[in-house]
Image (cartoon, rainbow, N blue to C red):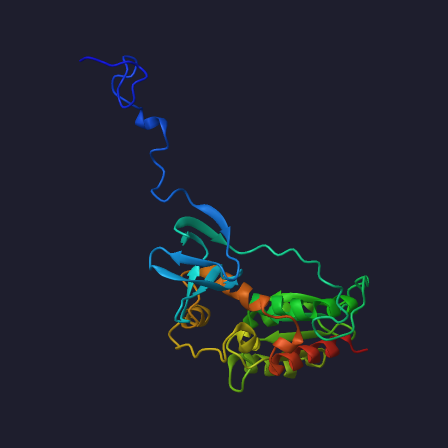
Length: 294
């Protein structure tokens, strides 16, 4: 083979008989380029690649890790944040925007009481409040936590109402050592109501108050309007209530991690007592009054 001079355009040189080395470039790079991080700011227009849905970002839910896009016909669809989007034809990985704000010092607690800035927690009283269910306990802490610390009331998690008798036996309620108990689904004829009646009739009855809300799950004690819908769905009895609720609301519901994120979303929507149903508010206030009396 005859080679040409090294400088001739379009020709190979003796030192490079086979042309450019294709491996010298990033031959594995996607045709549209590599994805870059992009904040899902409101008003950003992106395309979801698996559905070709193109729309403007109108909502981002940090707890559910989702983004809602509205197309030109004003129809909306929700997608998981992350990879799988195009911005002006280039792949991007969407993430929730970062907002750095300094909140003002509150003048009232989440329960509506007058806030006492920098008030030290009171030495714990002998009395206690038992709360059935981890989510119930987290909700009580969020709304009444500041008040309870000022009053020196400790809240203890109760795994189930069936464990109540054992807890009371260990705690030994008596004068100056009261116990308030908050249970789920305390309605007439239920197992919970029978247990509450048995406690009231027993020797510890004068020192124990068992109250409850009528909801299947404490999620329902959060006003649905605060979360963007009008009413909690009716979940068929054969479905797990939490997973069924997530499914009917269009939230991720595949596993327990999805349920945990959904609860974080629900709890995150609660700013204070105004976001809760009165059936829960009254019962918790009743318990606080009972254990702090005397």
